[in-house]
Every structure is written in C-alpha cells, then in structure tokens.
Length: 161
Length: 183
Image (cartoon, rainbow over all chains, first blue to last red; front, side, top):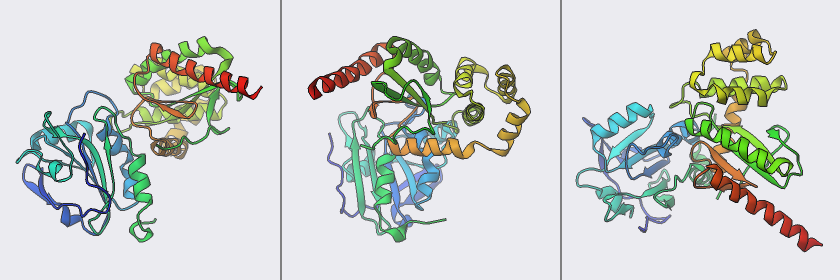
C-alpha cells in the first residue's frame, strides 16, 4: 500500500486537463476547501460506485463551499464519456501524461497496476492537507470521512445559508 | 468509522423492538442490486422470524436512477397512510416499470387516494423526509446501494443469502452469549 501525504503537508500544486481543451491548476482554487478523490479507473462495474455516490452527495460538499475533483489516469475523452454517462456534476482530472505524475506526488500511485489508489484528500483554503485517507482498493470509502474532515475545518471556511 | 444513526420511531420498522438483531438497509427502489436484495431480505426475515427486526431507509441515487426519488416519495406517502411496507413491496416487485402511472395504480390497489399521491409528488411533500434519510446515510458511511447494517455495524462484502445469514447468525449468538454472562 502507498503512503499518502499526511495532514499538515502543503498540497503539491498541479495542472491537469479537465476537458480536451481546458486545464485546471490546484492553486486556482485557493481560498476554499478542495476535495481530491483519486480512484483507480472510470467505468467500475457497479451501480452506485464511488463517483456516482459523490455526485449525489455534491450538495452536502457544497454547503462547505468545497470543490470536489475526481482524479484517475484515464484520458480526457474517457473521462468525458464517463462523466456524461453517469451525469457527473463535478470535474474529472486526467492524470494521464506523464502517467500518474500527480498521484505519485500525493503518494497515491499504485504499482505494478499503474493506476491511482483509492485515496482521499481534503485540502484547506490555504492549500494545506487537512485530512487524507487511503482506502483498500476494492472498498468504496463512502463520503462520511470527507464530511467529517470538512466539519473539522475552521468555522470561517464554511459557507452558511 | 461513522456511527449509525440509531433506529427511532420515525423509521420504517418491521419486527419487534427487543429483537435480537436489527438489520437495516439503505436502499433505492430503482437499483437492481436492491431489487435482488429485496427477496433475500424476505428469506432472511422468514428464517429468523421474531429474532430479527428489519429497518429500511431511503437512499435514492437520483442521477443514475431517474425514478428512485419519486418511488421513495411514493413509499413515504403510503407510510403516512399506514401502508409503507405494502407499498415498499409493490415498488420492488414492479421495479422494472416505475413511473407515476404505476404509483397511482398501486395507491389505488392499497386503497390510498391516488389524487392525494399525485399532488404529494407534484409538491414534493415527502422530499425532505427522503433527503433526511439520504443525508443520514451519507454520514453513516453508506457507500452504495444497498448498504446493510447489522446491529449498527456496516456489512461489507456480498449480501446474498449465504453471506447475510451467517453474519446475522453471529450477532444472535453474541447476544445469547452476553445474556449467559450476565447470569
């Protein structure tokens, strides 16, 4: 199993494609909490998988003003098809080239399979890892840990109303 | 790990409060896995009889199941009329054809006023109740549908009859053992 970045660590910045013609940098989101959800691959063959679950829980994350992003080594077109098929309302980042480079920075790359771990990070508005969790790859970690971590952020980071 | 929100009178409960084991399901009426679980739960219930209490909470995954929310609200409507479990069963038994026409027909079958159901769905009268279940599920660590809890502990892994039976059996055994110790 990997050693994911621990709380208190500065979250490494990165720039990754979110669509075939658009990139996003982590630092653009400074000022609000960010949830990074690394997962092994699009198209896992279950209903109510991890990304589908987060899609449904999105309003709860948004109550904290938090931005959720899913990351895997799948390519942008794959992400696009997956997001369309599952009606995902959050961004999927493509950690495709160099493969898994961002996952490696976060200690969430899995060898020899060559995919991301199922790893979660909550990053505070200053860009520091506030909480991290590495799940066994075959266990969907749910959303309770993320919400607890968001609960634990300083009050002023929450958006009420 | 998250702690399960305790079972309360607000919940939909089948069985006795002092049953040895509580099996709780967070489920979605349109989820095919929940459809499969429906008949498994029935078998489990008939195996354990009065020793088991079953609780069902809504966890509609509306983005992938367009009828899950309306079906959940229909069950809640029936619940308000004292017929939650009758509707719950009918919804799962007709899972392939969930639609408002079906709901209204089922209401009629259960002697519930279809017009009141139509209005409740339109107004979203039971939306808040369904959402409250969903939210508590998220906090309880629900990670897909169906998610089962046995005496408050999440049951990971397969939920077929052959897997659920021993998992529940273990709990009945433990309760029995604790009682012996107390004596």
